[in-house]
Length: 404
Image (cartoon, rainbow, N blue to C red):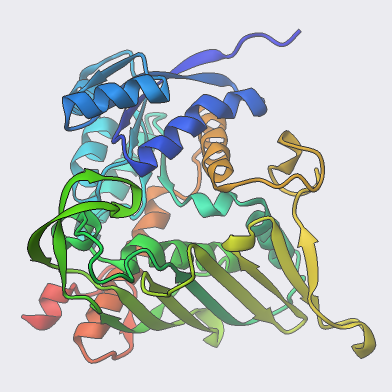
């Protein structure tokens, strides 16, 4: 008979879209995966008393607070989960790591390279003390994409020759959609580039096993002002507005080329202006022996092309990634019964809890997320410098430095 796992007390900061997704994952992971500890929804923190109290009841937390510091100071909390806007990640993560709490931090890691460097250094120091940290690039845990990584590592596509990636959404295509914190550079760091472009930057580096080394990028703010948000705001910033229009201080669209090691070129696009595309996160890797292609709007499918078979039998093959042999899929439903967006977070939590129990460092680490931040900074610097090729390294200039 299996013994009951030990408890792992969770403190979550933020009760919006990501807070809901993470809460569901913390409740679910140990019920489908064999984990060394059972997460317990201990305390949720948020700015507004009435809203955080409601979130605690809906998501299943035992208590709530309007001070995130209470989670740091509570010796009973084991993990701090940061689901807040990017301008708060740095302060909260540093405090949590210093207090010996394991940390899950949503992406992008922070709003600047400098903050990300401090967080990565603190995470490395904490790891020496047995404290684990993870950055929430949840799309890595999509079974079809995890299977794609296996295929690439096994040599299915052969020598990689080209990478292309897009993240296409349309939820801000209406010029009268209300202002949201995601359109404020002070809170979000950047717009489509950092919000959704960060995902495909991380994914392509993870899939290929190689870092982006140079970029040439262009950013554009398509809708320069937005009506101020009213009080009834839902997910995606939908709700009532006031008559006042506010300045948008981030990009709406981002286009950039990238150089990987060995002369491999990548083409990247991130936009929230693509009418009809709801969450089209697309990745294609072309190699000497074949290709893989993926679109999250068909998240249970992977397309693979084997160029080594005779010409009469060549063509993209659809793989339904729901077999027990596919990553994560064995824990769920019978073959063909697909998974959804929420499962990527459950897989993320399962991997983190397992790493905490085993005393290993989960991935993506804060150091990996730091490199994504450096790519974002290099794209911004390239745009400010007339789309010139810009290196991605610790000395990558910030936008402020290039325009000073």
